[in-house]
Image 1 (cartoon, rainbow, N blue to C red):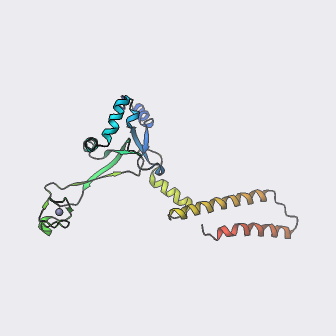
Image 2 (cartoon, rainbow, N blue to C red; image 1 turned 180 degrees about the vertical axis):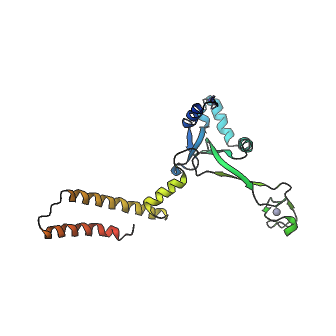
Image 3 (cartoon, rainbow, N blue to C red; image 1 turned 60 degrees about the horizontal axis):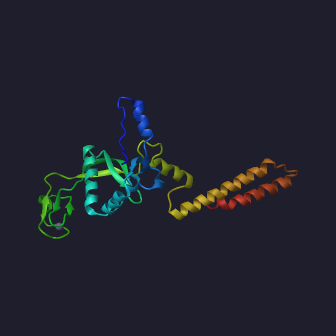
Length: 234
Ligand SMILES: [Zn+2]
């Protein structure tokens, strides 16, 4: 079976850097956001297992028990790292184990319903024990206030370009954020405008007006070509 553990000399900065730089990476969300993190390909047919075991594993993937066991392992990993590092699954079929950065903070919930699980930001002493959802007298205060676990999916771990920079660059290129159609129209218009300008530059490189009248006519032609695009307020 394929092994993912690679021994690294933790006393050597060069070894650690090389290990991280060469580590397999995978998108933290979708491939378009360009945010990636350290990952392992856990697709069962890529683990170097026999066909029989692969088949059994594929069947197991659909079971609740298997998913729960996997979730337990990921939760344990998060707990061991104070949720600053969390393991998540990503990919179309969830076949990639991806490392995420995260945090934990008080969730703000003070009580919960023992019947339906509905949580409430107020304590029982503040608002009584009636549940707002199932209307039963089942609300009790948390003895230990629950934490809210969050993770950052849209930023790259140790990569050169983050989502924030990507958005900033896209906005600078295409103007303020609009809907998808407007962004595409703007991109197409910019492309056309660029082509027109390049064309004009080429024409005017060898431009040699013999008379003022010819010069005026040529400039007029250029302006009337470019003007429709300027009116689009790109
Ligand atoms: Zn309830």
